[in-house]
Structure formats: structure tokens, C-alpha cells
Image 1 (tube, rainbow, N blue to C red):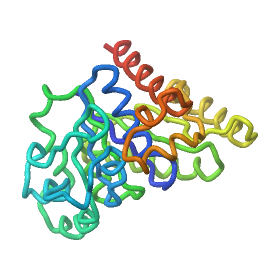
Image 2: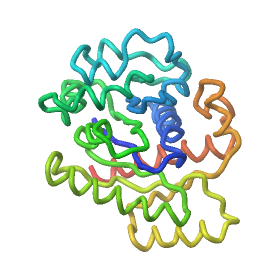
Image 3: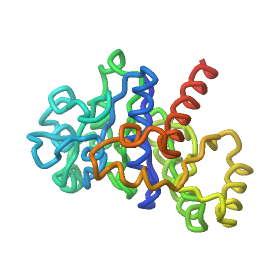
Image 4: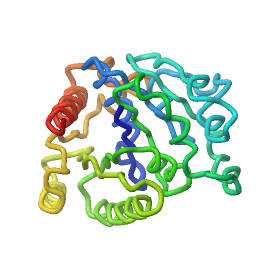
Length: 256
């Protein structure tokens, strides 16, 4: 079981889009996938076809130790994967966990025992480096960083890399950067091309070959409560996430 935290403290870079569409694409490739929504906005929950307003319990109750993951898990309404949903309640977890013991390992402990149930666990992190994100980084084997190829993205990336180093030093020595994913990419934009080249020269093989284009179908799909795969499979966005899933699977096989 591979646990991937999909994170970037910069908002609007396609984290949730990546979580939902990668989960659906890995499921199409016959992989067993669990998506954990750790963002109080609950967009991954909605985008997976789950009504967040009708939920009796969410990841919030798991982090507070009131529920087990198995009690909270639901099946995606549009995609062959399981999801641990979230809603606005999660915003309160930060304050409530502050004085709790072992607060950084709540998610890690909750995921223990699921090793034989899933091939991939994808964690959609909030756009902030807070206690909830630290829980994700402590539980994860590796980090996937979706990022836009623009000037400020590089600045935010250095902050995130520093956070990963701290988590590795104090909480999770095996945490790795799995890969950098270029999202919302417009090849006609010269700056995007330059930043992309910088990423490749600095991070080398850590940069996925697959590039996620700026695509209207990708933007539309969440409003229908479904991954883009089921909204328009022929779209460039859907094809890109199917390609990303295959690239990940090939990497796993190559690393044995």
C-alpha cells in the first residue's frame, strides 16, 4: 500500500483536481484506491459524487478519535474508489487537537491495518502548512506536489521542501518527494516553459513526464460531481490523468 500526500500550500494549483482524477484513473487501471479528503472545503468529497452536507461522520471524527476509518468510509458516487469524506467541521480540528497527545500521528494510526485493502491511499491536503497537513505528511510514504509553472510557484515550493525536511527530521524519516506534477499548463506561455525547464533541471527525474493541461472539461467536471473521466473521457484533461496513473504504475514496477 502506497500512501501519497498530495500537497502544496499555494491554493488553486489543482491539488483536489489531481486527487479526484488520479483516484479515478488508478481505479480504471484496476488499482484499489482510498481517497482521504483532509481539506475543510470538502471539494474532493463533492467532486467524487458524495453529498458532504448529508454526512453523519467524516475525517474530523477520525482525527478526534471518535470513529475508525472503516466507519466513515463511503464509496465514491462516480468512480470506482473509496473516500474518507470531509466537510466544514474539519476546520475545528486544528484547535481541538492542539492539546491532545500524539496529535501529529492521528491519521497515521488510523490508516494502520489497511495495508491489505488498498494499493494506493491519496490524501488531499488543505492549502496550508497546518496540523492537519502535518498529519498527512506524517502518515505518507511520499509527497506529490502539483504546481503551476509560474514565478511564485518556485517560492512556495522552497517553503514546502523545508516543511518536508522538518517532518522527516522529527516525525517521518522515510518521507520522500515522489514527484512534481505540472498542472494548468499552457505551452503557449513563455514563462510556463521557462519555469518548467527550471523544475526539470533542478529536480530531474522527480518531475513527472506527464503534464496536466489547462482544460475546460477538467474545470467543469466537479460541478457534475464526477471525475473528468466520466464527464468527457476523450478530453485532454482525462487523457492526461490516465497517462499520469500509468506513469505512476510504471515507476512502482521499476522501483520493485
